[in-house]
Amino acid sequence: MTSRKCEDWLWSLLDYVEDTESPRHFWLWSGISTIASALQRKVYLPFGLETIYPNLYVMLVAVPGECRKGAPLSLSKKLLTDIGIAVFADSPTKRALTKSLDKARQTQTYRGEDGIPIMHSSMSVISKEFSSFLAVDPKAMIEALTDLYDSHDEWIYQTSGEGTDKLFKLCLNAFIATTPDWIANNLPEEAIGGGFTTRVCIVSGKEKYKWISLPPQPDEDLYNKLKHDLKTINQKLIGKFRWGDEAYDYYDAWYNTIPQKTKQLRDTRLRGNLSRIHVAALKTAMCLHVSYSDELVIEIHDLEKAIKVLENSLATASEALSGHGRSRTAVDVEKVSRQLRVHQEMSFSDLLEINFRDTNRPELTLVLETLEGMNHIELLNVTCDAFGQKKIGRIKWIGITEGKGKGGGGIKRGPYERKAKEKK
Image (cartoon, rainbow, N blue to C red; front, side, top):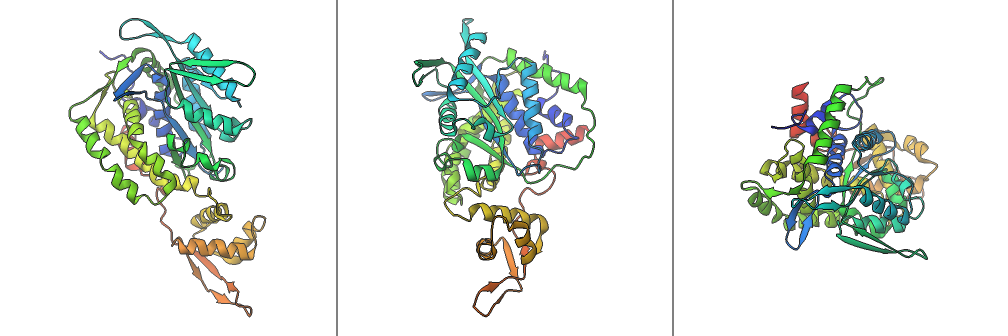
């Protein structure tokens, strides 16, 4: 007899946020991240010599104001705080983060499968502005997040002049938001395609789900049901996940397609993400399953959904990272691409007037030639002046607009969106 009040926690979450502007896939990943935080280190899946815990790093990426990316993080923080989950959202130092993890361990205990009390350092980092989270020491914090992603049984940190910190039974979740320009201008090159971003589910957004001038008051009764079930997930679910009927065979067959997918991947910065996608799929499948069931089982349909949302996110992750690279025009290429995607067609003079603070005529011409070479735009009315310099009359956007529409990123065709709309 289940004590749940929602048929499926994620379905109910999407119902609860239906009248909000944030894209559906932002809310879906918010729900997955929130469930991962509620599970903490209490459930696991054996994985050869290692153990997989369902912690996830999720990063929402969109230009400022376009996708209302702050709302999914705010609701996640509220839900977790309301059920007593440790949330870390300050602008920290590495030492502050490790001390908070140690404090969490001292106040968090559960009885394992053998009845023995277990203390654990489970915590969630939630930051609506990743730039603020990294403000004090970006390099040290990124290194810490990278290392702490692997839920170590024991982790030792040698401090500068303050001795040694030792942490036990770690499980860190991170739900963060930022912009493509911030990534391009601030995230260290070694973090892109290296240790950090390969551990992150990069969720890119382009536009609002819908425009709402005055959002209605949320359904308090539904919120209480969400809170009740999330607390049930946190307090009741303990132990080892097992494979459902034929689920492992499905996973194994999909896993063996990854080498071919790697060969076909056009953005080499995402190869690390693809190499780790199988672990992310298992973590996500665990979260998807407990959204509707108290049994610790990974079923085929859980894996199908997990793989779909991860592959959808990976397909658009390049957009989030597009301005990051060694090219001095990379940021401008990304910015102008966004502008042309919105306007569809513009004159060169209008485009230059919009961007004159960051570029000039020769530089903008180079940016447009780059986009033309990528088959994203068509240059119209092109002539040459007396000095042989190219003069562009108009620019027409012809690039593919993946994810355009209310659902974004293919999520609108997914099972959760369909179910939520049926219930409406």
